[in-house]
Amino acid sequence: MRVDLVGRTLAASVLLIIGLIIGIKIGGMLFTSTTTLIGIKTVTSTETYSIVTTTTMTDTVEKFVTKTQLAREVVKELSTTTKWVTETKTVEHWETITLGCESGYLITSYWTVREEFYRGEKVPVRDSSGKLLGYYRSDFLEDVMVEGWGKGDRIRNDGSYLGYDPELGFIKSPEPLDAYGSPLIPWKTVAAPPHLRKGTTIFIIGFTSSEELSEDIVDKLLTSRFIVSDRGVGLIGRHIDIYIGEQDRADMNESPYALYIQNATICFLI
Image (tube, rainbow, N blue to C red; front, side, top):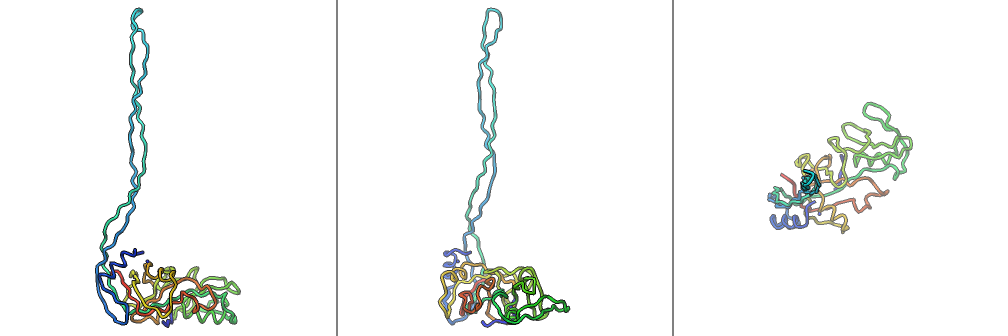
């Protein structure tokens, strides 16, 4: 949960179909449309069955019928062998997905801060009941209040994740959580305004950016299926915030994953 914000998996062919159907033009124009996407879904199933093989074996046995007569009796023995075979089949079929698409979105990102990158003075932190949670650096706490979660450095604290909620104050958890108490998932969890319901699946299909983005980031943006499962006080209108994981440098604003993308077009399952 974030308190303050400034703000390819569909295949390439699927993205092309979306673009052709809704005629998206990335630019300053805002529009809302509903379309139907036809995609290919591959299903793999495994079947186990038996093959029965029958083999006939013939034995010749000499047998005396009388003292003067020698007869040959043919004895046939049948044996049955069962062989189990497992076969995997891959089946492709068409699936219809209904999407709603909107343009003009702002995309930003948020992360879990790490105290090891901070140098401020250690100060005591208590929960809403007054229980001491540990001692944390003051500048680290400032960013926890912005980003929502941070991980302690184990210096005068137990190294748990420290979260902040404007109504609950500071809390601790074994892992960073979304607004509904589930773990935050990098490049899947999205914080969004209330008009995008919890559990909504979001696809980003186009955008313009003030800065050049790496191929890796573009690929993540255009191939990921994002799920709305977090909220934020500063999230209003056409604005989504993508959780990207934990802080990996002192100044995350210099990170290529610190996103500020305008005029994005998103589609969501309806």
